[in-house]
Length: 310
Image 1 (cartoon, rainbow, N blue to C red):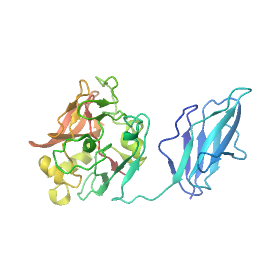
Image 2 (image 1 turned 45 degrees about the horizontal axis):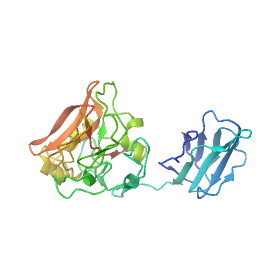
Image 3 (image 1 turned 180 degrees about the horizontal axis):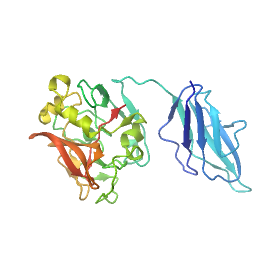
Image 4 (image 1 turned 45 degrees about the vertical axis):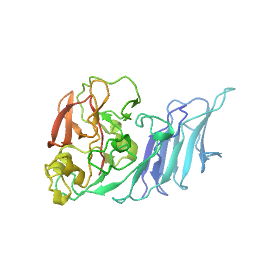
């Protein structure tokens, strides 16, 4: 069965698409460059180094059937005596069915990954199948915080490597904090006042891991919090129970809503849900030594994120 993919190649950006398009032989690909100028010619490459023209594809829109994987496509634009310019590169990679328990990986994604240096280029996360019933039960979850490089070995782990990245509500940008410095150290967004749940375009799970992944809902976090420890839940227990659960949550802390400074690392874990409660508050879930419970948090705080797959 053929599937159609439509995407937009951003004109004159230096970077290729960081998230490859996963395709199968026979799929249909449509890529569009807005408002190009000059003589247009789509090009094809199997290595992103040597390029050849795609016969018959000389308009702003590329429309082809996938016959080779992996492959790369770009639009060449030549206008009079001006230097030749190119669109972003559309990268295609083979689609491989995902099995929960496999690791899931991503590379650098502009506007999500804290920085484009080597330290932030690649991440790989263990995944685990939920054993409880109700919302989120039976689904696949990441077993590490988004942005983490190491799994925590204790409930009170304090390293940035296990904490991963922090996200303000409905913001795709991830922040790394080494305990002293925040990356990126841009102006902190405070306050956040908008009437919306977390949107897919700003969901870092979706943007980093693909369309099937997203931030859990309040109902899904609630079901996990109240599920019995025998089924891999927390049983409404404390941080120790959360670490002993299927998700192995640990006290990664948070970033202050006021200025983005590091707080509570080693003492509590708080995770965003995807649902807001008001224009400036949203549902989060806290796991600490005094217990585990929902928290109506202001959106300018930044918390770690776990991802769930539909």
